[in-house]
Amino acid sequence: MTQDSAFDLSNPRSRLPTGQTLLFDADDTLWENNIYFERAIAAFISYLDHRVHTAEEVREHLNKVERATISRHGYGLKSFRRSLVTCFEELTQAPVSEEKHRRIVSFAESIAEQEIELLPGVAETLPKLAERHRLHMITKGDPDEQTDKLERSGLRPYFEEVEILAEKSEAAYRALIEQHGFDRGSTWMIGNSPRSDINPTLAAGLNAVFIPHHFTWVLEHEVLEAAPASSTLLEVSCFADLLLHF
Ligand SMILES: [Mg+2]
Image (cartoon, rainbow, N blue to C red):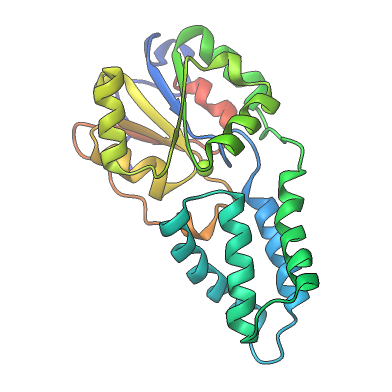
C-alpha cells in the first residue's frame, strides 16, 4: 500500500486539490447489496436441506454454478435465480417441480423487494465531494436493476455520468479513460472490490481508493495488488474518511 507523503491526512488543508475525478462503485460501496444475497442463499440452503452435502459444500457448489452462469448471462438477479435453480437440480439430481421452482425463485425475488440502504456516511459525504470534484458512477450488472437502484437511492443528482458495465476489467477501464478523456493523475476509482474496483484500475494507470466492506461477495475476493509507481492506492476504513483526502 502506498500513500503519498506529500499530504498529511490529519490536516484538511493538505487534501488533494479540487477538480479530481472520482469514479464510484455502487454495490457495497454506496449501498448495501451483498447482505441480501447472503440471506437469500442461507434460506436456499436451508430449504434444500441436503442429506449428503453440508451447508458449506452446497455453498461452494453454488459459487461454481454462479461463475458459470455469470460468464454466459452476466450479473444480476435473473442470473442469480437461474443459478439457484441449476444448483438445486444438480445437487438433487432431479428436475425441479413447479412448486419447488416457485419457492426457489421467491428467494431471489426477496432481494428485489429490498429498500435501498445507504452505507454509513454516504448521504452526508457524497454532496460535499460533489461540491469540489467531478463524480461518476461505474457499476456492473443488469442495466435496468442498477438504474432502478440508483434512482431509488436519491444519489443520481451527484453524478455527472453513470456507466453500467458487463464486467469491470482493465480493458473496460481503459475504454472509459479513452471515452471520457480522464486524466490518469487526477482520477480515482473508489470501491470495495479488489477484483473489480482496485486491481484493474491500477493496471489501467488510474489511482484507487479501497473501502473494505465486511460482507464483500466471495466472487469479488482477490489479493489487493500493490500500486505501480505512477499510481496511488489509498485505503480508508469508512466512506466519510474520503473527506480526509478529497
Ligand atoms: Mg461493489
